[in-house]
Length: 231
Image (spheres, rainbow, N blue to C red):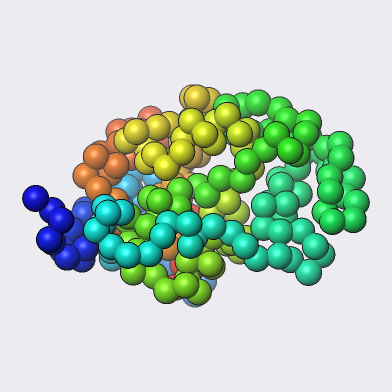
């Protein structure tokens, strides 16, 4: 029975294991700038050629603090909130923007399902690593400022992504052991971005998730992982 256990006792395997003593260091590039790592082959990244991010997982029922605290709230100086800023930045054909950041026209490609969208209202902005997954993977110990920083992270192109509402609802808060994008040609990039986002925010992974990452990585020999630490 888990109810009486402290949340921090429930540690999971990290996304990346620490390298073994006999590991070949050449498989991973040295940091290219302060806080920036990569590029590294995605198979090397998920199998253990980078230091492990630190963190423990905790079921949501075992700790205080609502997952909703991670929802984006920040408004930009141009009147566009985080959602609209992401949608504008990912447009294939830029929409017209009226007062109040109301958009008309434009087009977008939703990579999860390879669907072209011509109405911004039909898009959801997904946290690449879902808010509930962040919470369970170490975010439950974050303070309010770090939760807000993740929820509105536009410094990295990996944290937030505009996709069809249908694909976003299908994904919900699932990790790669439970859900992969319907567009099979996007699986390698999805794996790389998932891994990079977890590394960027120093988040952990459970065993099923890590095994799923390793499995997909076998089909991605030319995919690389690059990230900049948010810490």
